[in-house]
Length: 110
Image 1 (cartoon, rainbow, N blue to C red):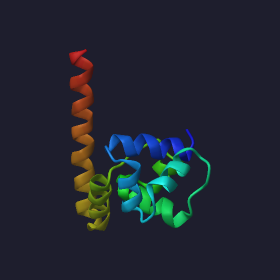
Image 2 (tube, rainbow, N blue to C red):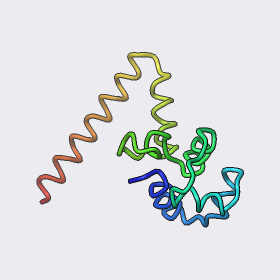
Image 3 (cartoon, rainbow, N blue to C red):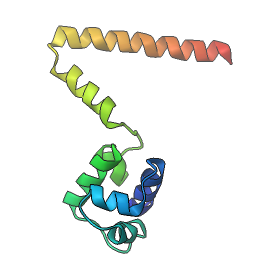
């Protein structure tokens, strides 16, 4: 998927018009349309503002990862990262247990 296609999909997912998106990234809706049609490439500063406006990571927006993390999840991970090592490990153990339990329930339900 091109950057323009990714912008289009995410913008529509957020139910934003091109004009609304333009205001969020300090440009015009017409320019957003040109980005979406891959007629022009935005500057890195504009791409960063678009990622922020769409609440996705920069890597996801530009196609470096298929892992879509919203801003709230990223902020949670930042908070976990700031914890002392022992507390961080406890949080990760709980998270691992919850994921394991979810997968087990899904497997046995199917």
